[in-house]
Image 1 (cartoon, rainbow, N blue to C red):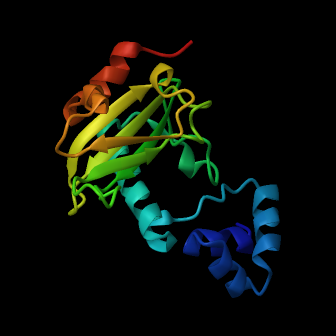
Image 2: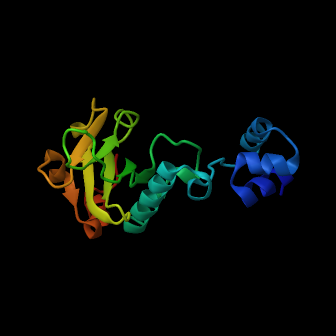
Length: 181
């Protein structure tokens, strides 16, 4: 196996692997792509707090839908997170925050902007402050096309809670859809 691939797989970080090899990370990136090595990184080890929260939700989704194909393992910055029987799914996560200084209520906020033209579903994990799941929302494309962000009230009413699914029913939902043609 090529030394560049070995170094990258060891670190799963371009800058660390490049430093070990004594080359520019950009050069290593190009070389790995030429070799067909998926350059995906490791959000749990090297990502920001936001990246780590996203990686945790993606891992939970894969645990709940074990037959999903993780696109983040195949390419860097994939346009969606999972392919589930041909259905394209992006996973979002949020911890409740006070979004408006005038109101003490907390809400979860999710950005749909990038995925609104790509995905068939967006799966939102509404987490508490300890990162435990309070709600899982599964929103079909028809209901988010054109939206940039949504806000889901934690204790008030929110139309987005109509999209709640039970964690243990997520897998069977996709099975019920069958393969996308």
